[in-house]
Image (cartoon, rainbow, N blue to C red; front, side):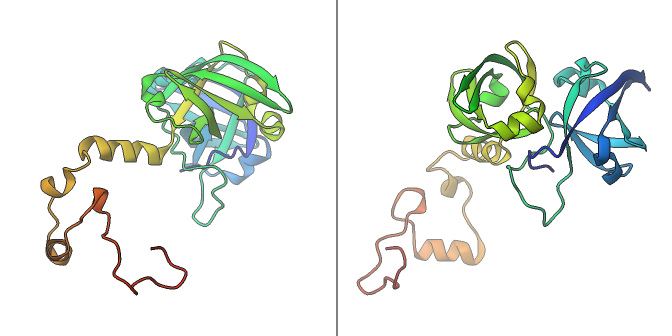
Length: 241
């Protein structure tokens, strides 16, 4: 699990065939010293496992599937990549929950300046766009960003100077391909709504045990289980009605 706050950028040393897959070797700089073999490392938003480390160079295996459905299969020596080690329990969640499991590859439509920010418009596949909402979260090449606007098959994000300086996003140009991951919470919410349409939940999945007995005695009177208005004098000081 990651948070979309890039810790460092690395440089691709090589991408070569290995054991019917590919080996990606990176110069990770000082970050390499914090990594151990077997640990997870997000590379441009893709969760990889560190297979080997020597000095500031780390290597990871790419399965054919990873090379196909992400941009990592097209990396070349000298390319810069965003790096983030796995989140530890107790760490600050500075961005949003990012799994490193890319939902699709997007294409940059336009990049333009607006004051001290840069607005980037991205064309996204349905596997990503269906989960996007204005002011929601999305990971672009592993960077946690806020969706400024979304419409149809695309969305826009606004990049602050810090993001432009410490990630690879400051180098984006129209036509570039980027890894996209939709917000994990949004995916679960939509999945739940699709499999449990409003109004059908209680009839299809009646509660049992103490909870079922309570609902039988006190049935919901409004939409989504809205409680009836409290009786006179039932309101707590400073609490909701």
